[in-house]
Length: 393
Ligand code: PLP
Image 1 (cartoon, rainbow, N blue to C red):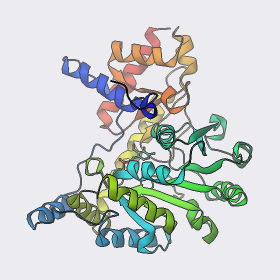
Image 2 (image 1 turned 135 degrees about the vertical axis):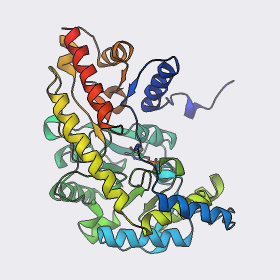
Image 3 (image 1 turned 120 degrees about the vertical axis):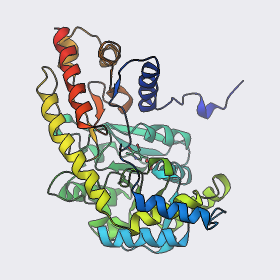
Image 4 (image 1 turned 120 degrees about the horizontal axis):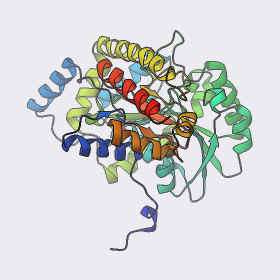
């Protein structure tokens, strides 16, 4: 079968690949600890389940407007105002099938052939593929580990060409967990305003932060930057609702309208019941979000200490999300492996610990560990990694 050119270079997500391999080993009877998960391990809170169940039995099972129900858009509008002090009209909001589809649709309506999008590396695996699917060109800029993997204004300025249409800022970040400070966003924002570049601010991990400093969106800095920014967010990570597939984008009216038009011909609408569930998530008690954050915070502190105590493993301490992104180059060399990928494969085979190699995120010296599993399992995983490193010395 001859497939279209646009999918010839499309690769499956590396995070999914490792999860699948771990599952395979588990099915064969091995005690595998998977640190590859990209989703919280908590149940969706009870009141959300109840709202969805009620909606289903009350017959809310039909098409909704393509860009989402008015009720959910109003709940999002209120959330943006309350949490971030940002006022948006309803026609500046689109509800999508997860944050992933918000990004996909955005690139489809924004990019012409060869238009460039600046993607700071390490990056979330879907950005480059989605940009390419829209016939755009991802332009990677290596954010330095010494600078906590954060893009600098100079790096941004140097990467801009006549074809640059947008830059992605993902804070807190997947895979590094780092979070930009207000002043850093201000400086990056100034460069974007100067060159009239759209900021795609992926804030899906907004609620999962573990420092005294609050998450700040670049759109909060000034009205001008608000106009220059499209915020992407959703309930997947904040309310442990990855399977419900509800995300959203807020920003420029024209852009949002085009995204809704595209959705009307491709997906029709996000699942009606899931939209009611997301509305309950935003309107109901936020205590489950706080509880999850506290559990993640404790895991981060412990796992970070266990990891950096292992010879040859160095790690920038994350401030958000639920990932650690250690540099394992020294351990890989000490252990006699050629690449991090080989080291990761051997670790999975020998000690049955599944990590995701950093190569898929544009950082070949690192690995990504997710701490969306219990503390007991994390401790066991850290012990196994330590044993592996020591056995190969
Ligand atoms: N953006 C980032 C940085 C992510 O890590 C993810 C999920 O892993 C998404 C977006 C997509 O989220 P959703 O499940 O809502 O599509």
